[in-house]
Amino acid sequence: MMDGTEGSRVSPAGLLRLETTKETLSRPHETPYPVSSGGRFNCPETEVSSFSVLFPSCRLLCRPRRPAPLIVMPRKIEEIKDFLLTARRKDAKSVKIKKNKDNVKFKVRCSRYLYTLVITDKEKAEKLKQSLPPGLAVKELK
Image (cartoon, rainbow, N blue to C red; front, side):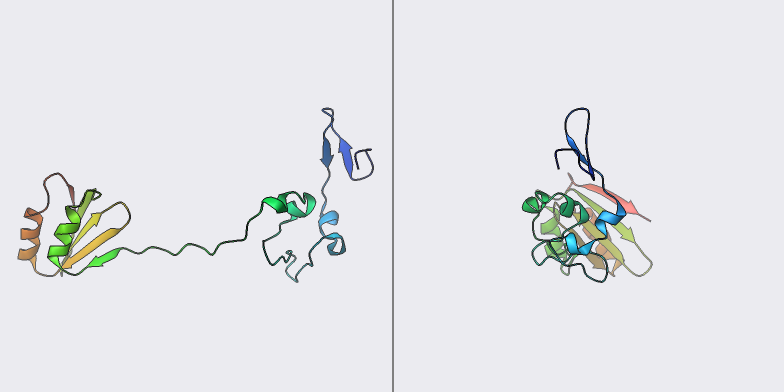
């Protein structure tokens, strides 16, 4: 292919440049893996794209696909005592207090999780607000 035959051209720098067309990619009998009905290539170890069919050395670098990461939801804390211990941790950055008509939510942002405490008693919520660590950034929402 280095001799400038059909399907390739030598650039002025002397490098080989492949010309890809839809016709080249639509020939399943020339690919190393069978083509599924969806037009994608089936490979048990990795997902093979049209790029890796044209450049086989890419397949050596491909790794098996990992499953999508799970969505991490906020952690719920049931006890006020546990919430205060969490708020006093070194990695606690800030506390957001959200007041609704039925309850008050305290959300403490730590390095990995957002911990939430829901209190239905307004008086307990005020006492908890006073007992938060003084170095912690407190932001009140609505």
